[in-house]
Every structure is written in C-alpha cells, then in structure tokens.
Amino acid sequence: MTQDREKIKKELINFQIRSVDLLGSYLSTPKDLEINVQEFSFDINLEQKVDHNLKSLVVITNIDVTSINDTSKKLGSVSTACVFTIENFNDVIKMDDKKLSHTISDAMMEILNSISISSTRGAMSQLFRGTYLHHAILPIVDPKSFTKASKTK
Image (cartoon, rainbow, N blue to C red):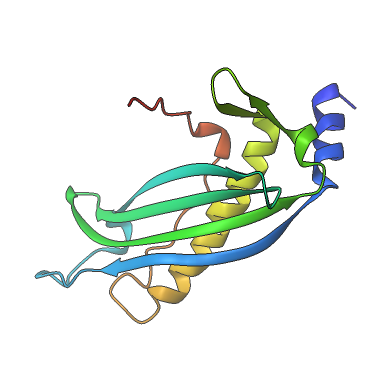
C-alpha cells in the first residue's frame, strides 16, 4: 500500500458527517418548456470553511443548472452545507498562523468534496422531482478535477 493510501486510511477513520443542510434552492419558470433531457449544464462551486471550536469542516456546495445552449440563463440551483466532524482535527487540519490559512491534505479534501457533491446530488433529485428539471441529474464528477480558486481582497 502506498504512503498516500496509508494516510487516507488513517484520516478516514477519524471523521463523520454531522449534518447536511439545505442553504437554498431556486427554480425558474422557463418560457420554452420543450427542454431536452440532454441539454443541461452544471456549474459546480465548492467552498471549505473551518470551525476550530467545533473541530469541524464545512463544505458548501453550490450547483447552478443551465441549458447547454444558453449557459447565461439559470434554470435552477441548489446550495448545501455538509458539516464534517473531525476527531483528530489538529492532525488533519494544519493552521498557518502567519498566513491565517489552513492546510488540508488533497486526499482528504477529495473525499469530503466527493461526499458533499453526492449529498447535493440527492438534494437536487428531491427538489427538482416533478418539475421540468426532473431529469437534470448531476453526473458523477471527479473531485480531483476541481482547482483551488485564489481569493483576492
């Protein structure tokens, strides 16, 4: 077993989902109700927040659904917050006091992001049931494909 797998195995043992919360949802009323099932596009954004007091990490997932032909028109959206309690918090999340930032292993973030995206997929399925977005099923995505966005003040 490689070192990365050993590290993941150790980290996996010490976290759990504390909650999955719906932060918001949106469904537009389109003028053209003849939307093809194959014409959906998904814009996925992830944001991680650390709560030192609760020894937890929150992954906020925002997904906008658009038509593949016109990505400027939002057809619907869902936002969720997945809260993960991390037992060995100080070993997994390293604080850099000089930069006022946190470091989390890429492997751990991929796992938490994957769980968060999957949970949001389930929320979308329930929220859009019976609407014209009923078949707008978020495809399975590789959490490695997400890049860290740089934040500017």
